[in-house]
Image 1 (cartoon, rainbow, N blue to C red):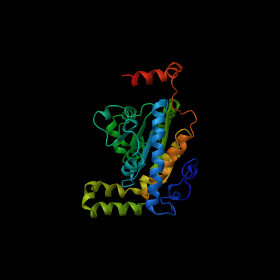
Image 2: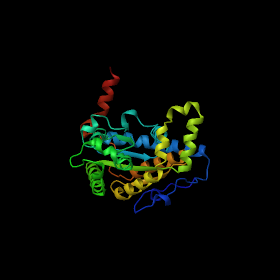
Image 3: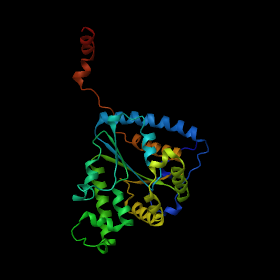
Image 4: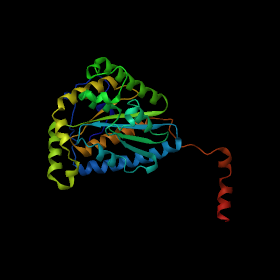
Length: 292
């Protein structure tokens, strides 16, 4: 299979979503892709064990994409070989009454991973510049001072919110959180196929909501908002990656490789060594246990 290179997916300059790939031809069948994923995720699992023992970095994995882009299955397959103590998955739905009594980043702060752990966020703080930008009247539920009607949710409002998000991520990275932001880039045609599949297969029916069709009609607006959000917030310390999502197995393999290759580049992540006193007495400790 063609080598997966981070630079092919990392967004380092201004983009137009219409020019980004939604499909990659791997040159091999899906079974070979799945076998390769198994190898990478095992290495990722071992690396996470080292990071847990090291205890200085946390990893925040942000997954964004349109409905049916494969976020849930990607989480299941990429992190399958992690020790359960080392990964925490959060899915952010419509804000609760309690969450709306706080600023929009509050609930995301609460779910940040602690040092040594991975936090995987299925939909993220970017919902606050995506869904709310497509539906600006949602902002009224936040009860923000100075925002008295939808007309107040203007470009100056969004400029401020993007600055807040950039500052939020900068603060996290300066304090030991490594951030990955993955845009699962699904074509409109592939979404149609996946929605029809949900309707055709009885065991998939529960996933379907009529609201999916309403949001699909706003596809163009969502793409505009994604494009603007990515262009404003893809920074060296917290980059976005475009993940072609029309083929799920390949999307998962790309994400796993980006995670592993990037984290292996941190040369200061090592398992801690025993202190000199403990090292000097290892044989004594073994003898004590064997003599029980």
